[in-house]
Length: 207
Ligand SMILES: [Cu+2]
Ligand SMILES: [Zn+2]
Image (tube, rainbow, N blue to C red; front, side, top):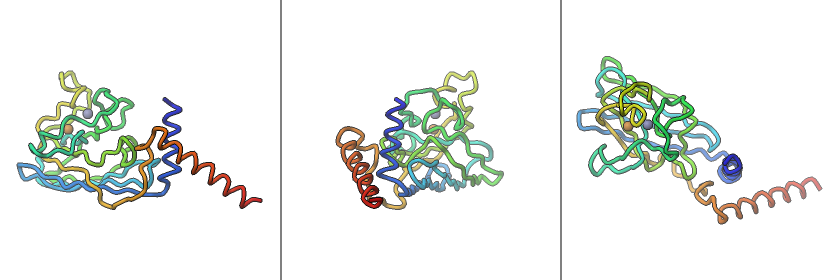
């Protein structure tokens, strides 16, 4: 497993170095909640930066997650559960064990405005686990971060209904290949060729 992670990091560095990505989410809800979120990542080895602007919320904390599907055919209800490729328990953003989509809570002020930004080291816009095409969902209630005795605490954080959602779309188009999308032999070969070629190139410069 560690070898795989190291290998995918190498591939990532080789193929996608210094190619920043930026995503945009237009959030809409049925009860007047709206806003937008931008997710940017300078390169695939660096954390994402998430910038959130939402209005129309009830004052207080609201669960804020990435759900697995970008399907809004039945509003926020059809976005599935929290994005959880590792099939682990729900948690807080800073927990070792958490869903990839667990971004904790956002806090709305007395005017219903939530404006905040932070980084996250688990969410990524690159590779097989990219969150592009999935959905961001804001909940009616506070996410308990998996820390209460409620039966849903370790599944959803018991954050209640879904008050707004939007699909994570591409803001700045990118054309470069995605490192992990070809993590089999098809991907390893060109990567190996790139490494060998750049080594040869370096040597010929030295000589
Ligand atoms: Cu959620
Ligand atoms: Zn979760």
